[in-house]
Image (cartoon, rainbow, N blue to C red):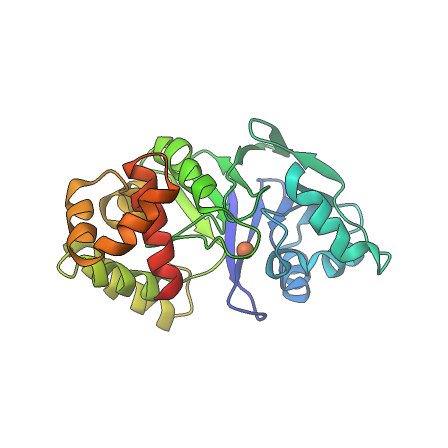
Length: 274
Ligand SMILES: [Fe+2]
């Protein structure tokens, strides 16, 4: 698989261009349509797929530009977000979603098989695409963080995605997120656990990546070592929250079915205010 991670000239997004050995290509969330088209043309690829992880405009608004250049491409999105994507384009007579998918479906790109994972929480129909140990994760997990739940999301559902999906994938899985919030996220984590050695080293790497305009990448295994959203059952983290943010943790417990969910909700709400 050939993979390019592209920094968008619109917003603070990153998006991906994937191709198999014969130049059959897919774009994931190409918000910056013009740059996406140019990259596909420059590489000499044939664009077969336009994959949307979720309905937010900063992930789908490049679709019409891409489809004008490559009308043969198929637009694929999660079932529960498709209507919200279509609604953004129908009024302009633009194409919406061509095919909806749900967890367990396989999307074929020439010689590459992409497995669809249901990863709701940031939005109801958020999906991710997994091939080998590469995860195109949209706004589900970030280096040092988790997607927000303010625009159609639900922190209880996002917790289940972390517990039942992300925590069960191999530790070697590298993920590609839609934004780089790594510096802010690491600083936030240090406000809870100021001495955490892995967070301190992630912060240094994140600053370097930001300065070089690169999307910082880690593995899910590395995230499990320091990203608090992946450590909802970690006793040390629970002690840190209980001593510094007892009221917030108590409030989260009232909305949660168990302590792990309460920790996750507490983190999400602290990060929203941070
Ligand atoms: Fe989003």
